[in-house]
Length: 276
Length: 158
Image (tube, rainbow over all chains, first blue to last red; front, side, top):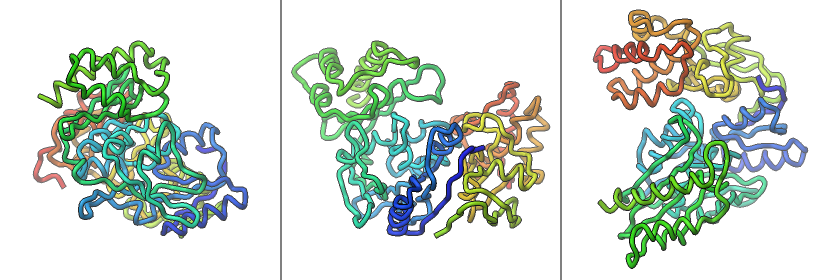
């Protein structure tokens, strides 16, 4: 039971969504774009949100697209995690999405919602960071394409009224050898102690991580250290771990020292897994 | 654009019947099914998406109805446990003692039924992934697993 009142809108087009957002915002309704809605409903139930309207993006055909188009995969922001795992067009993304929450929740959570919500882990973002994908963003009077690294760098860069329409991934990235591992404190279904996605491209590792800092990240500096061939694997891993882009999480799920310990061991295994 | 502003009457398709309901836009599907339509098979448990007792099918896929707005369900096919009507999984649960107190049973039935329809040849690991979405406090997990195994890999499963 949600103890607050709000109105519900399900636009049919991108322009309708942007327009109704602007209108509701100007009326002081504090609208929120709505994907799968699981986080919004959970927070509203606890009275932790204050919105006067939700704008459900699932009625917009472009946001529901999941297909190959020439050299690209098109992944609409309202595609559910289970749609992604069932279609399996991007195996690493399928793996990452298949470990977020539980299966029934994956039928509701959308890829856009996972990335734009307030939960810090955003594990669906990791394969997208590794693919250097392009993101189609709609806002008042514009539809623009930006790099995923511009959309997200230690935080989400969306202006008020903007929403993600699609992710455009070059197909070649979906075919790269990959490694995915998610480690949790106890249960299989939980937030990550560490969630790691990696690919091997032209003999070099690319690496994206969640659960270590207060944001998911891909670190080129860490990748550079891991890809050095002039030092031992142990030294590469030690050097890479010293380049964390922010404070390491230290909470009830795992201390900072434990998370780094797990990371070091995981990175040692990464080389063996991807290089054979 | 479909919109629900304030208290409104909307139409839902529930168990292959059109049903008109009066809702607030903030009403959850679980609340509407139980309070407006008297379909009490979907159970309120955690109401936080963790326990799975409220699971229904939306267009054939399992969804936790505590985390879906009723307004979202407009235009989609909703199936509750009342709509299963002697599906093979129901008999399999009875024959394999797949429950004790029964509170979680309807949610489990919906997930198992959806699995048998979407992946009738599901391997053990897929079955585990799907069923991990539901919690049984009486720990009837082994019996539930046996019931699901009866209906999977069964070519005459409807």
